[in-house]
Image (cartoon, rainbow over all chains, first blue to last red; front, side):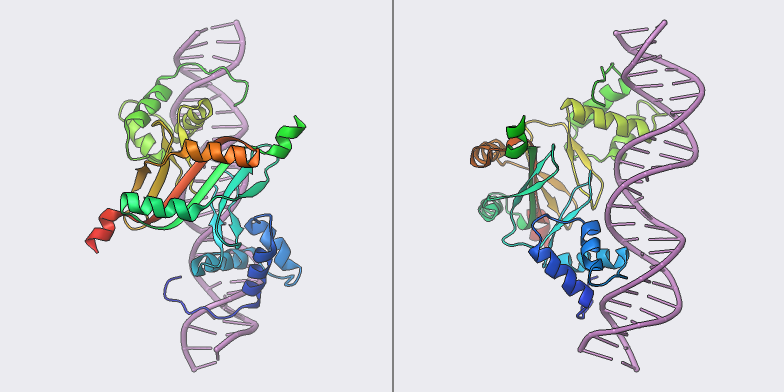
Length: 130
Length: 130
DNA sequence: CTATTTGCAAAGTATTTGCACTCAA
DNA sequence: TTGAGTGCAAATACTTTGCAAATAG
């Protein structure tokens, strides 16, 4: 996946379009379901391959999670997330991650090219119900 | 793993002791290697089970990564990390995550109980060699 | 033409689990 | 004596990959 000149693919365009509109941070499975609406025969492998390409191209961000499925997010600017342990929803957070990244780079001398900032707990909605 | 009254186990104590001394953020496999030195017959399943218990008890933190193995960290206070894409090392970062968590809780109303803050890129050591 | 993309199914990887036995309290 | 801890092996869950056919440029 390094020295490959990507072509245009209807499926990939469809995946990216879906990701850009989605606010739910879909997993590969959810992307697969969505893409099947326009490409009924699309396979799981193809969805995974295209998600990897989109991440490689910088068009989407992979939200890694080893305990549940990875999710994908194509919304900019990239931002932090909050995962509710009760309802499972993944919220976007208005956190200026760029500022943190810059501060950090100056402090350590590392070249920061990516980051993932996640919080978890009980969301205000679930806490309110208690 | 909820309403269980944990007993003392030599293996678990040995794992925690190792984790507390380690600065390398060991994976389960590395923990297994280490514990085998004192308990030669310890199995992989037991290591995983005990790591989960330690995380459950709050004694250790699981550093989730879906692309590579999870790593474990028993050093306090909990902190952010930087992963070098070149050499693979995982660095501790002197980032005041408590401040960020508090700010966030006030801003959103969510009850924040956990977080994982990861950066990646090229570390100063690898960049210097270039 | 030629390299990328695809569907399908099989393989891969890290982690978890069932079972029978052992051990801590 | 009772239920947590253990070794072993099989199972699980998500993701990747090999292959031959289809397609973009």
